[in-house]
Image (cartoon, rainbow, N blue to C red; front, top):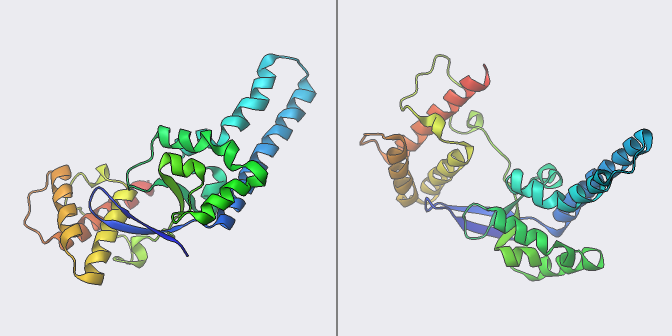
Length: 237
């Protein structure tokens, strides 16, 4: 199993499993099924209503042509097929992917698909980070997302009724921030390395305007608890 270690801007190193060739084949197959279903449905509709409008040809050609680019751009590095397989495009330098990264992956896709995808499979197998030509150009790869786990089965058993957050403004954070916080805590618990947690706690105190001398690990766990209980309350409304 190939893995990829990515250092986040918060100096937390997260290890991901690189998507296998089989994972990517299955994801692509599911995307092709969606494209074929779209074309068949559109053909049925056009056949039923008739018409010889240039817009019809546009609808037949352009959406399937831009399918991968559009979905990766607007679904944060995932197409429907990739999402169903738990895969995602990421930059190997740890930064967030942008449109240029997705475009560079997409523009070399026709070459990668030569010989029934043989070019892509060859380069994925040959490169240490599982990159096809488009990935090499864009500085990206495809990873298998870790199974999402909630705080119900880690730090906390259940959300607390009438919970009052210790810190205000935690709703400005997001699920990705929580994953980074959990990784920093795991690094400390596994190795005793306080540096990632310390740096992360400083950034959180600045972002949320927190004035406290609380231990970094205690602060991070408190932010997790505040976030989880606060967002759970919102989701239940």
